[in-house]
Image (cartoon, rainbow, N blue to C red; front, side):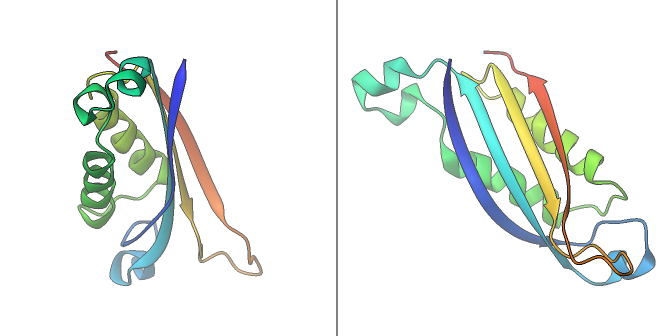
Length: 120
């Protein structure tokens, strides 16, 4: 199975359980792995035979800048569900990372990764 990796997509959004997170946009990073058979694209060199990265980026942007949700699991799940219906996608893996979580005495990141089966 072939993979297309789109990594380090950075978008600001208002997501989290705290009021502060709903009020002030914070940075998120999204990493996408799309799995399928892309050998036709390698031979034809045609965008029609593969996945348009622009569509993936627009989907991620729309979800991250859209309706506020509480959980990273919700964001990752919504992105994965939408990407899983793209033609040629057999599996999709989505990781959403909150780069600056408002957790006292913590300077790291938190992330959720989900995987969904596509339509192929």
